[in-house]
Length: 148
Image 1 (cartoon, one colour):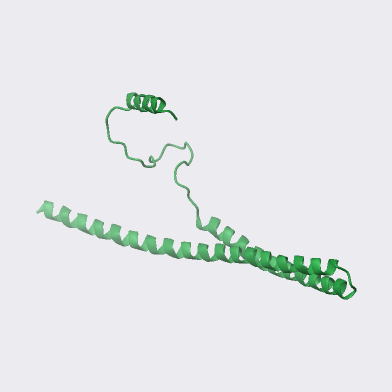
Image 2: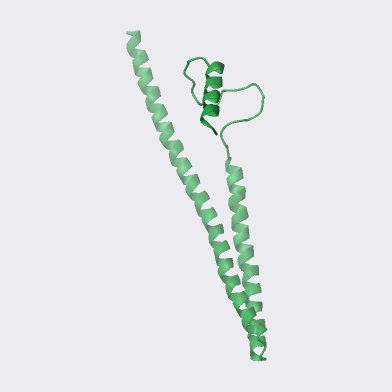
């Protein structure tokens, strides 16, 4: 972007908005225009992601181990018969195991992160509720004082 273009954009923006304060926030109820603004994820959504990660972990562990073991047996048989393909298949089985471990670690990471996020959210909610109730009590104290 050229400097002149930047200056034109700034001038156009200044024409559209008079000098005033603008808060960056999500507007209140917009009368059924649909939800816009911050990303919102509910407990059910997180639970579904966690369940899918757990199922993938369990299923992939079982099927991956079966595929790896079968490949290792085939590689061993081919090597014992003098086929060079046996060493190549053994290498593939080894790499398969490494890649499977990476995927399983990622699934576990997702599950652990969701658990941490839920616990942190609960702690934040508790803290906010405490702060808000303290503010309410403080406001009530000021209101009582004004009445006297």
